[in-house]
Image (tube, rainbow, N blue to C red):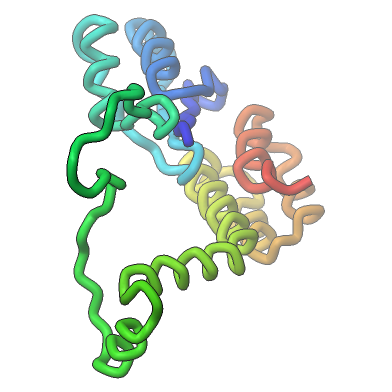
Length: 193
């Protein structure tokens, strides 16, 4: 899944899109800044810095290290697979469990790894909507704190956001600058109609 970013110059939304597109627009505008420019990662609502030094190619090359391309964009060409186990992007990490947990996992068909993957997938399916709503609310709050923390009704709007009172929330932020208000609503509620 590709990451998207939004840049604001003061209270005005400058550009939204993939990292490279946003970085190049900001680079051109930043040479004559009227107001500070802040770039936000849409998924988290947190500000992020792009290194805009050098030419366009240099900027884009650095961005691929900071923001790797999506999995679809990096699919390997259709080459015959070599010997051995396939590279699945598996990263070994340590998990601390009690002996009874390890006994149960090892008794499962396919062993501990298969059982853990099934448990994680099942949990993701079961709590997917709630997790997405929490992540959207958190992203909206992070962005809102940075861009609207000193605007009227910020505290009340924050309470309404976390209470999931959409009607009250949108009413409280109705008088905020249009681009800021619209972006907060997009972050908080874009996946819900």
